[in-house]
Length: 299
Length: 85
Image 1 (spheres, rainbow over the protein chains, first blue to last red):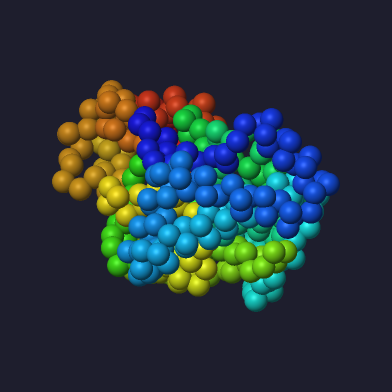
Image 2 (cartoon, rainbow over the protein chains, first blue to last red):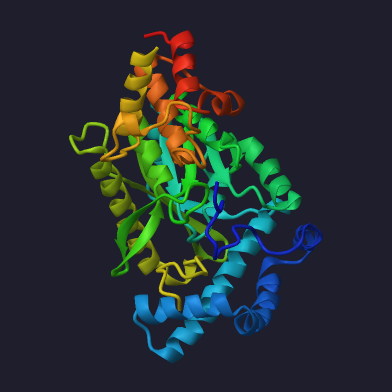
């Protein structure tokens, strides 16, 4: 069956179950800014000891964003700090803290969920897409693909909040049960939510231009949309300030009435997603969280 | 049965975009996944949708899917017994 996720990323939140449980407890009593401050002190150690993350992040700011070596070095710090913030925010949610969620197109989302057809919600490892699960109230059930290797604490935290929000988590498993679930979700007029930037599950990919160079995006999400003739949009949830997240819904081209070949439809959707993702990353350059050799350059 | 097997092979080639492949090159009893035709989870999705669109069969159980998608022959036998169109 082959690797079930990319060889270079772990696909799970760091820390043991006990550490994560302790963090939720701490966040009930300690203000979030204090936690951010402490986390900020630890980051230089991460920069020293997690070489792979440092190298990939440094290369991203230098080659893709076009910054000089010194600015790229400090950008890595800000990048890792931003990652620490979104992880802490997730645990803060589990601990019962609230965040302000703003969106320019929340009405559009409400109109969409009122339609009988199911659709795909595609996200990437930028910002904090999990926050959408807490913010978007939908009459349709949202089936979200999650990495099966997450700890019990992470799954418990998510479940306790998601269950109130009509969100069902679907772990990616080798028995391919997730494929059946996601297909049925769309067939029944619900929402299939999945990452469209990293290869996991199937290793089939589509080559698209991203930040000036070809990268591989997973074929799965786009194939599902094409096979079911379903609409898809990109969902980005970006951190605007300490307590505020900004939700963006960006439609991918409607392929349901297109005369393009199957491959043409896949290419059109993947290229569009890559373009929207690049636009978002350029707007929020510190919230790019693919800490591995995304461009396959063996940096 | 042979006619249905050939029809399914043609549909597999089309749905999975197996360009340049002929029905004769797909062994009827070889496993579809792993060592046989080498299909993976995305191909499962295409086969599920193929069954639904072409034969009116809704396959929802992964356990059943494992048996149905064991080979082209098991797939054809399942279609023969369960098709609604």
